[in-house]
Length: 184
Image (cartoon, rainbow, N blue to C red; front, top):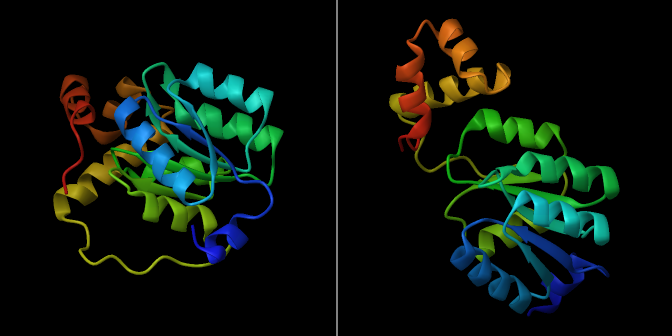
């Protein structure tokens, strides 16, 4: 571990990692420990909420979609227990709407999976107002469409029927679109 990272972590290196992919979260935990964090792992919303109630960490990396619910519930609970926590939301879907929702609920940043330990560390320790560099590859037209659908879906409180009505789309077509990963 470099002294620079140790200095930037500060006096409380507690890090909560929340992801239902046990292999990914175990590998990330080992990598973050090598960087100087003291990690705890939760593989469900319930486990994460229990960890937050027992001892709210200074840092958290939370997967957005977990088997038993939304990682946004964990973001909200952690922000309520510890206002100064630095929270990064990970998503395999990379939807702008869910990322905006996460930031509004108190997340510091969001990253699309697969994110490596260097990216996670940078996001956790980034200066408050630092802007990320511009994207190397801008979004494709299919990706822009996907992002728009995700934004409307979030604005409709994840109600498929209402989203389909607002997008002038058949509900089953929308369900198929939502079940797939977003295009690159």
